[in-house]
Length: 467
Image 1: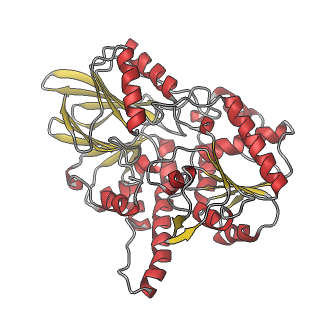
Image 2: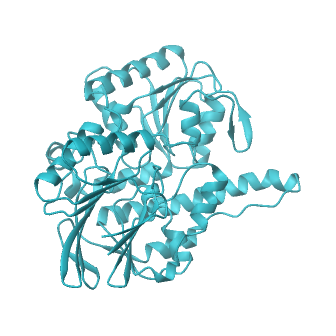
């Protein structure tokens, strides 16, 4: 068996790992790389392998950095099955179409200016038709239900507790009479998050491909995160400004809404309007309501037994779908909370809100998601100003804050606890650390070695390992 690391190798985005077993090729995730625009476009467009030679894709979850380049894969000739949980497929039905829609719209917007300047026009990475073609290849499998993507390979999904439908991927392989088990972590969730169940582990594992996003950091406590949100909303309300929360449409948006609901129920939410301005987030919230099999016990009881109460809705909250509704927020006079995608400010309606509101000193930008290197969100979070939005420069005069307590990723302690459970239930020969930046990768590697891991590798992009 060979494993080759083509995405999220010494970086956070673009998850994509290629397994070769008995002459068959399985792709673990096919995520969109996010970073410097030109490099990101070229890397996502120019796949490093022949798509037609991939036999199957096994998808850990729906986030765009794990699923977002599936349309490019199908467009380039892949005609096999894409295996995922049903919740992941339902989310991807909206997310991949939304990704294509954003790319088509953004290219159309930028091309208007380029045409006037006599410059070469851009093309989108893929279109909505390409996204639909990818969705036709999905095959849904429940948690803990074995399936065989290629002969000699059996796969199971277990709940990763990261977002709705997220999974760790257990791969059992038989090659030349030798059995082995590989575990791909996908993204590991946090214990005790609202709505979702806690992440699970696996037993009898020989090799682990493990994420390390927060491998060097500890999250603030749940109480600290809640208090920061309360104080920030109260402050922006007293200023008469706008609180902009760039948030992933799946997972993070629903958690923030849930927390604001809790603040209102306890009487700690000021009289302020809250807008979820993302068609994708509206659709994703509907998908959440369709999948009680993914809920934790508390949330399931609330949704199933208290039919008059919706934890993802409250007085003063409005979900916006249309562009016309979104544009009205540009001139909205009252203080407001605007939750909008994308979480790393790499596309979507949050860009319009940043250029209309973040230029005002009365505004606050609150980051509740990890910001990868070279993304617009990372630049703003690091204090860079002016920044380029749609090719024009804007001064960021808003206060900029971050709240890592809302991350859906396990922190360093959580990652090490999860790895310890895997180690104690088997005899792991080797860890491969992916989906992290240099500090997180090296810190987590050190922690794993202190826990007794004999072999910890940090693969480079394109590096191949024989197992």
